[in-house]
Image (cartoon, rainbow, N blue to C red):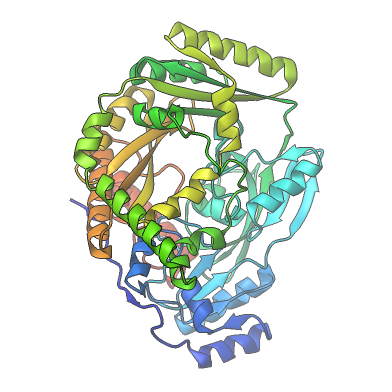
Amino acid sequence: MSSVPEIPLVPRTAGRGDASLAAALTARLGPGRVSIRPEDREAHSRDLWPKSLLWLRQDRAPPPPDLVCTPRSTAEVAETIRFAAEHGLAVVPWGAGSGVCGGALHLQGGIALDLRCLSRVRSIDREALTVEVEAGALGWPLEQRLEVQGLTLGHFPSSIGLSTPGGWVAARGAGQSSSRYGKIEDLLLGLEVVLGTGEILRLDRPAAGSDLLELFLGSEGTLGAITAVRLRLFPMPEVQLPRGFRFPSLGRALEAMGEIFRCGLRPSVARLYDPLDTWMALGPGSGGGDAALPPPTRDDLRTAPERNELIRPTLEQRLRRGARRGALQGVLRLARPLNFAAGLLRSCMLVLVHEGPGAETRGEAARTRAICTAHGGVDLGVGPGLRWLRERWAVSWRLPRIFDAGGWVDTCEVATSWSKVESLYRAIRAAVAPHAFVMAHFSHAWPDGCSIYFTFSGAAPTPEEGIAAYDAAWKAALDAAEEAGATITHHHGVGVLKEQWLERELGEGGVHLLRAVKRACDPKGIMNPGKLLP
């Protein structure tokens, strides 16, 4: 069976950048584009894969790039890739570094291609409802700029404050409102990409023949570097109607959720919490002090587990942290009995948000309420939906605290059809239960099925013990997903974490085709090598 891959690690301060390569590339691009400073190279040696936070406790990291290049135009991206091809250097495109599957790790050194300076909004077409934006723009400022003009992308990933349009396309991302507005492949109308040959390619929809845009959706930088995208826009909704329903069992709730979408209704948010997640959401202390937090930035998340090293705590603070660490580790060591106890819970909560034109949206909300009631749902009013809208970003702030307190946590998103979704949930939950505390919610629904978004958490009294439990939980989850015929990823991408399961999902023919596309777009194999079936 497949296993979570081992990544070669080095001390965080290991190695020097390549000064001669940096000088040669600087001569072609001009000053201020290339860095070999240790802090820049280390910052680009990892993304936000939670496993890397356990490595940090060991003062280790994946190998850093030899140099970091920050081009300021598509032409400079092309020149950099041509330079890399001439010198046989790997190139790893870098947007905001917010990936959670290790897709931006450098397995062969080379160049970190930091696209953050490609951040211009090139055009907004209010008549056609489209925006063209460069790949390195951050999602939250882009959405705020559109909302001032009465428009929205409708794309709200939890990482919106620290992710980019190029990354959304490269990882085939989804936002929290995807059930109404679609995933990124539904929003994508065109892109500009620099292939591994240095050729600049422009693709647009509509187009004759094969839809070549699909090649780059989910390609994770292995075919080329995306430099700009053209995306669909929507008018800002006139009304937003949140609501919550409690169901007597998961099965009844899933029946209602499936019927809502098969009937053609499209709530922007439909999140069904499993019994444990429901109990935590409705129990004492829900709606805590994080409700007013904005979407977190990369610096907010990546430094959280290191802050205790950077700030000298008082004795009282150290004692409090030690108590929290001991309490959390004590709880998480009891994963198996806690999972058994959670299995005794039954009721589930479905949070819905309808939005759009006033009369149409109210009509849809009324039809949805009737479906929920017919399946045994109890109307909880607007409270659960309002609370979800207030706290929609809070989970991203909370996760690093678990590492800080001596545990580990990660999320796993799989997807399947409505006929298989409950059995898939139970299979993965049973497989992971011996290794980690596990709960889930169901979201990103469509007429055929939906995604299941699991949260795993375990104790890490030492980094080594935490890594062993982490790897065991992931192997159990993806083996179970594969056996159930589900996709191993819905919107987080593959990276190095899931790469060993990808081949069996694609099948022999799919693997052959993917490798042929790679050879055509990147004949020297320099683009993000070691990812997506090397």
